[in-house]
Structure formats: C-alpha cells, structure tokens
Length: 236
Ligand SMILES: [Zn+2]
Image (tube, rainbow, N blue to C red):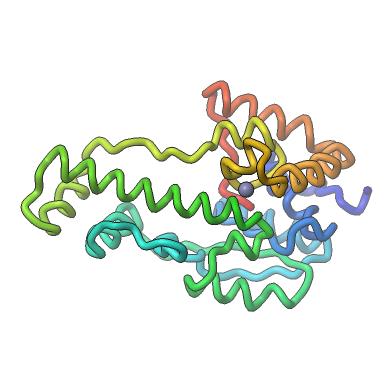
C-alpha cells in the first residue's frame, strides 16, 4: 500500500488519514475535515490519493432536520450564535461526482452531512436526537432554576453562561467499542441490536492494520479515555 503513504504530512491526525483512505477504498463516500489548521494537509493527502477536493462553508449546526427542539425559536438562535465570530469552512474529499448533490444539500442545511459521509442512519438520527435533548435540557434547566419572565429573559440567562447539564451522547462507549469510526455510534449499534457500526468499524480496522495506523489511533483513544487530552480532531 505504498501509494497510500502520506509521507509529507506532519499531522498526527491518524483518524483523518484512515477516513481519507476509506473514501478511496469505497468504505465511505466522502470525507469532511473542518479543523482549519489541517486544511492544507487534508487537501494534499486527498490529492495524493487521487480524490477530488472541494472547499465549502461548513454545514450549519443550527438545523434540526428530524425533530425541532421544544424551546422558543429565539432560544435556538441565541444558543447557536454563542461564540460564533466568523463563517467556518470545511474541506471535502470524494471520489465520485454523484456525492456533490448531497454535499450541496448539506451545506445548505437541508440534509444531515452524516448521510454524505456514509454514517449509518441509526447513528445519524440518534446523534441528532441527542442534540435536540441537550438543547431542551439547557432550556428546562434555565426555566426551572431561574424562572425567567418570558423568552427574552431566558435568552438573557443563556447568554450569561449559566451552568448547564452535560450532553448525554455515548462518546466514551463509542470510542471504546468502535475505535476506527469517525462519528459517535448510537445505542443500538453499541448494544448490538444494529450491526451497522460494527461492520464499518471492522472494515476500517482492517485498513488501519494494513496501513499501520491502528496503533496510533488506539493510543490516542486510550489517552482520551484516560482523560489526558488527545481528543480527536473534528474530522470525519
Ligand atoms: Zn447506529
């Protein structure tokens, strides 16, 4: 697998490398990398592999395409406006032009990008539901704790950065069970009632072993699980 060596890459972002190789092997239809410090590297690695590269706006994070959170619209808007100071970009790498429609729909906020990236539908839906519940929990926490007088008061409290309940998606369990996938697996995949993530993870595990990426990925996950940092870059 000499042609899959990224010798000029300086990054230790092994998960991105594995995901890019997954695209060329047809395990997933597209790669999306949104850590700006790695943009040059994603593009160079993609080109070395013969993938097509596209730079776009990042798909919006303020859309809920399966279920709308039961909170006021102004609260959703304020929540997603927090800490955003400029438009974010993302690098896509793909092999076949037929994914372009999906890329364009996800950048427009009309399709969850997880589908373009080949994530199982069960995991995409569950992750999105966890986002909805997270936002609802924050809202309910503010209502129950501070009893704000109306929506504007609730937004004002949100923007003063009150303590909020942690998100409840199974990130640690997912890393532990499926170290080679680049999304958070759903409970059905984790308890074995869906085989989707297990199958994808096995396909990636095989490639990781062949390309020598398995040890570095396992090491960075161990580091993450033991709480010593080493979180994975926001790449998929
Ligand atoms: Zn799943």
